[in-house]
Image (tube, rainbow, N blue to C red; front, side, top):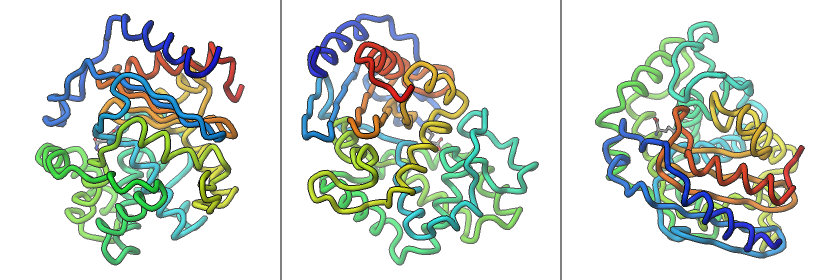
Amino acid sequence: MSFEDLIRDIYQNIQQLEDRGETASYIPELSRIDPSNFGVHISTIHGDQFGIGNCYDKFSIQSISKVLSLILAYRILDHKIWDRVGVEPSGTAFNSLFQLEADQGVPRNPFLNAGAIVVSDILLSHLKHPKADFIDFVRTISNNTTIDYSSRIAQSEKEVGYRNVALCNYIKSFGQINNEPSDVLDFYYDLCSLEMSTKDLSELFLFLAHDGRDIASNKRILNERQSKRINALMQTCGFYDESGEFAFKVGLPGKSGVGGGIIAIHPDQYSIAVWSPKLNKKGNSYKGMKFLEAFTTRSELSLF
Ligand code: GLN
């Protein structure tokens, strides 16, 4: 069966499933999203593309942006970045505080909120115009000028960001944040507010299926070693305390966001994005996980 027929078939099956998840109500603007949205888009390294459902609608990618901020910081600091943030799965929720004390303010990995806050601090220290430079970077590597922040989402998150304020201040107390916490957090909320469609996401992340090179221009975004490591981190840490479950059921590097999006990469094959806003208890898209599990199972293509 072709990818297109398979995606169509699985999409119809999953759409009929009872959606057992809940939208992310802790960010008020996210709870207003129509939970029936459901989109899927795949881009292959051979240039094939296919999308279905709400695949062209932009939504809040939230923590998926942590991969992009990490990539930019990794390009700037290379391996020195690992002095500031670890590479171990945490087995904890995305917004957990509790390992930070034992780890002296060095977050276990860059995809936890704590880790992404440290990455935001690194970017603030190295970019002249952090907000403008970051969006330029994303637009350049994706060749997509329609990608933008949502000030509405960023503001909504800021108003209720008590947990992130605690994380940032706590890390600062260990001397692991160099800038003013309020500046770091404003930038972090901007990063999380990026809006993209599943089509935008699958096109943008395809370079990670291609050893770090853009498909069309063959230009390097990351070197091979860096690209391998980003994929490894997505594989081991991309779904917080559900990372093992995602590897077990889907078997690909991936990253989720509380907006209900998931991106998954099959090295040397494709990148696929799914969006369905209702989340399971671990904060990952309920239908998105089910879709990808069925897709890698039925296509008989995964890393394992
Ligand atoms: N912006 C969200 C937060 O800081 C990101 C969480 C996520 O997508 N898992 O809580």
